[in-house]
Image: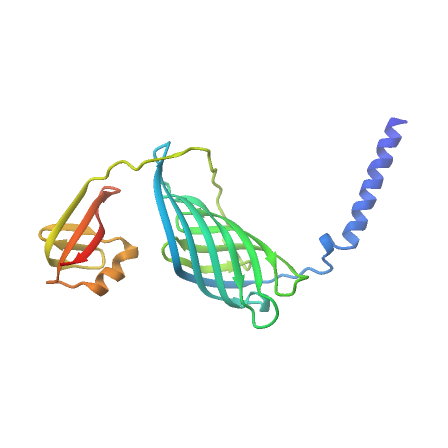
Length: 243
């Protein structure tokens, strides 16, 4: 008798599930594939760093990035992404999450929240939200090249989205960064390139995200004061001022 009751209950459950599917998944009556591409550059970022209890360098960045998205109508228009990136910069892996909004040509904006895994300059994950038609739900695989100071490049919604990686976020705590070896010099800039600067005999590497700014404001024979710190084995520019 117990077996019959169990079978009857199972059949009832399956029947209910079949009815639910027939009526649509969470109210959906149709399903269609959509694709889009996007890119967005930094509008504003705030970053703090620390060293974790397992000796890794951790970077936490809150950023706003703006650009353009194109593709299906619901994915075409100016795009704004607001993110929180937690990156292990020692191993170059982490997580980038946040929300995005696309200002489509007519109707309400398309918006979604997303969670992606970062792995050596690329992110891949899932975005879930609503298209500009309030009744249309958006579920999209999303991928892009990413840097906290640069933004998103070659982004894709579906359409051959790049495969992702996997990371674990542990409960470890951040400690104070150990004091880095520092140096400074004041005098005439004797050499300046996209990758390094020399002032009063002190040569420091220029980080890629600061290269354009330094080279647009300074030139050889200018007087300047530079501050550098040992980072990943290289004497690296951290600050430059005109003198």
